View 1 (cartoon, rainbow, N blue to C red):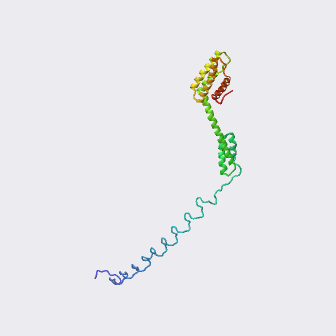
View 2: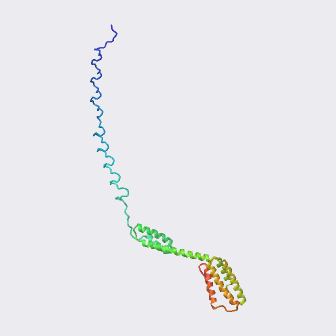
Length: 266
């Protein structure tokens, strides 16, 4: 009795056909290189061969860079206007009718209150040109009138400033004090007249010495000379020259005008 187990049916030997295919025998699985349901290497389109996907540079369904397509490129005309291009809704300047009110007001006020007139004239000129209104000529005239009045005011201020400076000159102050004190010589005797003349001449010499402006010093010196001539006539007991009294009056008024703010006061 053998110890080898028995199997039903014949025992397949090596090399005999059975349910398992041998190496190299045809079977249900395709061998390498044999046609089957799966494509072999080379079934997909290679680079350069026509296929379902277009290569770079070949015409296909997708436009390449630089090729015309359904979307406009940068700079190409499209349905939307580019920046800076006129569009259908661009606002158009509307010309206003009539004369600009600020131009009229500025022209009128230029004669009354020129600083306000100048400002309104400038604004009116700008508005009249931007709105295409009338009144630009009036605005220009208002500006010119205002500038003319400003120039005149500057001249007046300079003149008054100089007059104030001259009137406050120490020579003017001193000479006016002397004239007010002893300038009225009266009709007294020769001794009183000689004393007053000496006091006036001495005071005018002191005023000329402290004067700070040349015109003030010159005027004081001229007036002092008039009083000196009168003193010489008194000392010689002679009648003064006929024109001397008129010269004293003229030089006295000139001195008063020069040394008074705003001119001489009668």
